[in-house]
Image (cartoon, rainbow, N blue to C red):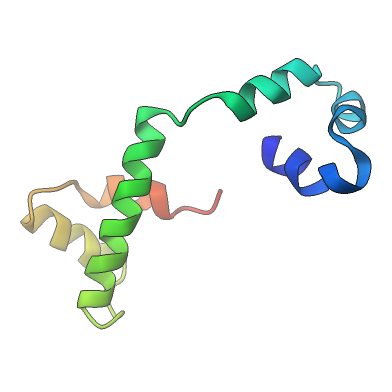
Amino acid sequence: MVKFIDAHRERWGGEPICRALQVAPSTYYAAVKRPLSARRQHDEQLKIEIGRVHRDNFGVYGMPWLGISFTVRLLRTARTCRRPLAPN
């Protein structure tokens, strides 16, 4: 919801979009002000590490090999690696 409103806010304004979506404007503004959750912060750090491992291996590692690489490095399993890489 926040991404949609941010994408169209310049053209239509935040409050009219909230009205059309039947969402209270205060809900939108609270979501914008809210800091990232610990999980989201961890995912952002993990994305950087995943990108580094992918680059270090000449960009040829897919999800199974990235998971193995992270397991060997004692980080997290492939399941944890999938979440930050999934499209939002």
